[in-house]
Length: 226
Image (tube, one colour):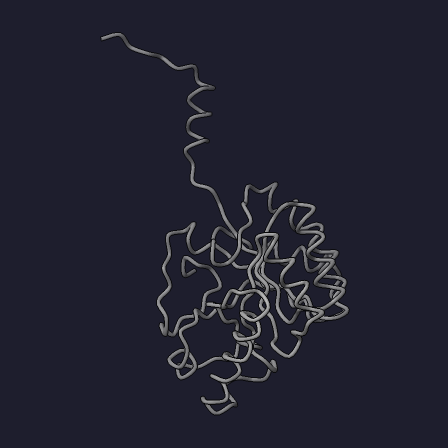
């Protein structure tokens, strides 16, 4: 049998090509906002990456629905962040269920797609909430970007110091949050430079072969359970 000897460079290229990809998901809470959400979508479009938007139901109207549909057309997804952004554990369970239903209904009304993921405001949750709805609960790696005094550079540095394969990155697109817009301009190129592919949260689960169970009681910061 004739032996085939590949040059070292060819072996390295084959090895690199076979390596599994690293994936992370960008996600945004508290929108849709007519200005900040729009600016974030502009940046996502520029870099050709999707994200997941966890929306507050009472922020959805005919005007902001245009932004949700723009996001969906770009390959983004719209998920649930409650209707009023209250502390969910302080509500009777029937009121919590109504918060989820109202927001799901509005997202479906305007986009035709019903949410399957829920990020509780203030990451305030308990077992009764998990048992009451069929959504997967989402947290994420954050940078305290709701604090106005934190500069874009600080937000960028915090995320890049923590991020790892399978992470859900938690940011906010509420009114006036311009430092997160500026941080995002730094973040996306650096994530790509580090070898990360950016996908939606739902796609992140699929890419990593994870099928989260409904009513599991678990809240995900990393889809691999880290």
